[in-house]
Each structure stands twice: as C-alpha cells, then as structure tokens.
Image (cartoon, rainbow, N blue to C red; front, side, top):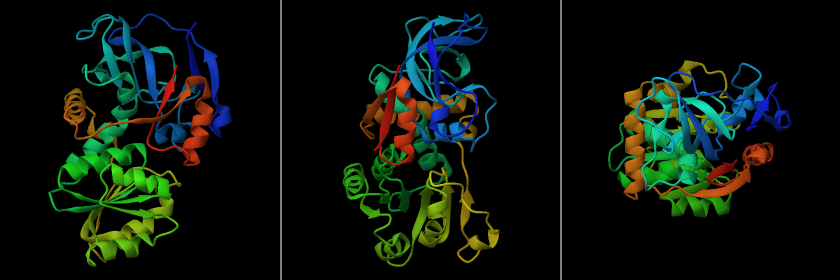
Length: 323
C-alpha cells in the first residue's frame, strides 16, 4: 500500500504521522500521480500548526513533481508516463502516490528536472505574480525583499535584477547574506545586526523603496512601513514570525501607502491564469533568468524534522522531500 504523511490534529511537528493509505482508481477528471519529489513550503507549517484551518484528518503539502500512472474518465491532455507538477492545491502532496485534479496539473518541459519542479512551482509562480502582477515594476525601481535567502526570496531577487530592478535584501546571517548577493541582491542587510529601515533610507538617499515584499510578518511589519517611499506598496505574502498585528489603517496615511495581501491561489484561480503563470516561470528557468537550486533534502518520512528546521530558519533556499 502507498504511504503518506497525515495529521489527525493540528499542532507541533509531532502530530505528523507516516501512514499507509487506501488508493482507488482515479475518478472522473482526476489523474493518478506518483510523486518523485515533493516541495517543502512555509504554508505547510501553517496548515500543520493550525494557523490555517484544515478539515481533519488531513494530508499536508501543496507542491510536487511526478509521473502520471493512470487517468480518470473524461481526462484529456495527460497519459501514463507524462512528467507533471502541481502547486495550487488540494492539500496532500506529502505522499507517494495520489489522485489529483487534472485541471490543476501541469506538464513539465524536458529542460526542467523533477527536483527543480518540485521546489519551484509554488515559489516560482509566487515570484511571478509578485513581480509581474502585484506591482508594476520598471527598470530603475528599488524594492525591499525580506527573507532574501529563502526559497522564494532567491527567485524574486534573480528575476527582479533581470528586469533592471534594484534589490535590497534582508537575511538572518552572514552566510545567508553571501547567498543573497550571489542570487541578485544589490545590497544585503542582516536582521538583528543592521537597522533595516534606517539603512534602507540611507541606501535610497532618504526616499525609501517603491515596493517592500514581506513574508516574515509580525517581526518586520513596522520596519517595512518605515522603509517605504511615499505612495509605496507594502506586499505582505507570508508570516513566518507570526501574523501581522491588528492594524489601524491610519498607519498607512502619513505616506499614502498601499497595502496588499496577495495569494497565489487567487492569482491562478482559473486554468488559463495557471497556464500563463507556469509558462512565464518555465521560460524564466529555461532562458537562465532564474536558476532554481535544491539546497537540502529529507526523506518524506522525516518531514517532521524538515518542518522543525524550516521553522528554526536552519534551511537555506529550497528543500525537497523524497518519497
């Protein structure tokens, strides 16, 4: 029988269990996918911990690459043996094999490996909408990027630099600073060491940045506000340090700031939008605009340890779980 990581309650990593699962033939409009590599993302910890509610019992995980084993009635465009990847739900990719909605599945181009696909679909399509659809950036603009050495941060930095955008990254250590420089950041600040807002003002001659991308949340909320230029945009797309505080909208008034809390699942809510986002991502990979890299891997059975390391900020860049 195939196995999967399952939870019956939400909480610490210890709630995760490696269990045998029943698997039926794919239903109408489903494709049976055997995963070859599975992506680890911060949203997985939100589902596990209870920050984002789940209907229990449940699997975990949003993203993976694999091979089609069977197709259900009514499925066109896929056949057994196809290399595929996915990232937009349903939750449950921490498994060896399962049935997945054909409408959310994507074929992989030959130049994109399973490992890369498994760790770049969610992060890469997030980078795509952040840079190309959330903010309208132009060459010469300056952005602030928190968690610049994280899986999404490394992709955003490379992609933004290719657009002529100046990137000021924020990381948690000297080692991560070196990585951020290597992947496109023009300047890198270290949280806990540098006064980020003051340094941003100095680096921008007192103007501030046009857009600030903040996936950290609670710990960086005020810093992000203080780093923005007048009429700048605060893009909050994660909360690794905890939810942002309750906000009186007056905090945005002194500089006439814009605030958005975007979601990949809304940006790619239709099949056409999903295909357009994936096509732009694959083109960026194949053309060398971004070079996704797997920095560490864990056996899928050890997903709990992967969660501990991710939450402790011990990981750098992208991580793959291997079934």
